[in-house]
Image (cartoon, rainbow over all chains, first blue to last red; front, side, top):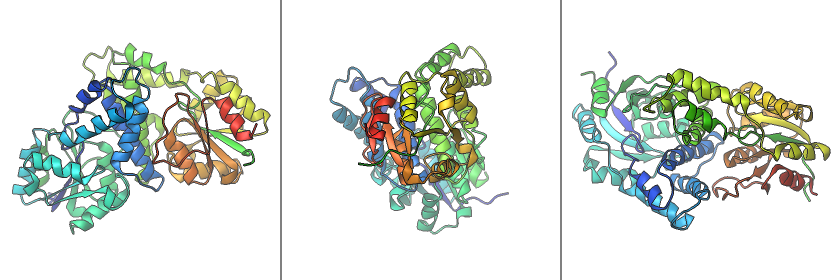
Length: 226
Length: 226
């Protein structure tokens, strides 16, 4: 049996946080709730496009630009586009973790697995999210792609995170809801754990996860072999 | 004044083709029309994620996997998810060009600019689209990222396209509606022309286009200096 990983890196946006309440903010500025999913996918597309072309821009700047583009086409905004974008972005700092996150992080910690986060977003977002959930004492470090100026799933952030926590790639696991993130981690030499809360099919063109779970405690059990 | 480019590479999906009719196909299988935009942004995100992590998967496979993921969460599909995905994908082969495309391509051709396409999608999609619009005789070559196994905006496809058409990067221009594509072309050494049909703000974190136009004839005039 595979030994438990020494370090678990948790992705942040959507893996730890529930973005759903942001839909209310789209509605509050006069836009459709369903723009949330397109906005988030497009933000990832543009940030990852920087990585693919060898560059970098920080999450907030990319997310804001996508909002300004999307909101420019909404016919009856109740606030000017730049204020509307700020209102939505400010919501990122008020999100909560999914209910399975606290028991899942505790299970990893109790099994002796060191826990850190690794995010394409800002460190302040991850820090605030963990503090509101009173989980900050269980998380050793919030690593962001800003430190290496390259978005996941390029290999640099995963390897930088392993160096930062002083762990070999093969002894670390990346836990994420996003298949492209699991894929990038696997290609960088880490293990990959797919958190599949919705029971979705895994895209067959990406590297397969080593373990899959419907919630974080289930994934933790699979990782530590209980 | 900058001389006219020797070769213009036209992006295909959304730049030449109008994807809007695909929304009907989402509706026909029992899904919401607004899934179209999320699906297309997510397909680009996942294909570009392969490029960022040093790999490749073909457009159809990526697009299909995103559809299967999205449709798995639709409560009342009228057909099984795999058939629904096929129905939507088949629509890619029935699209038409935007009305400004024929006069725009003719303007480039008449000004002595060689015209080619460069797409993240399949060559058959580009070829069929141009044939239905009776433009195939004005387009020298349909280049796809499949030939170099890397999605735009990684530098490889742009450089491969220039080699294929035997043109120096600085004598070629990439025309696209997508800022991330203009960005990738600029970083690879080509000129970048942004086709902005909707009057959107250009994201300030991407390399700026050399020229911008609200339709392809306007862009053609700007490129050939008329």
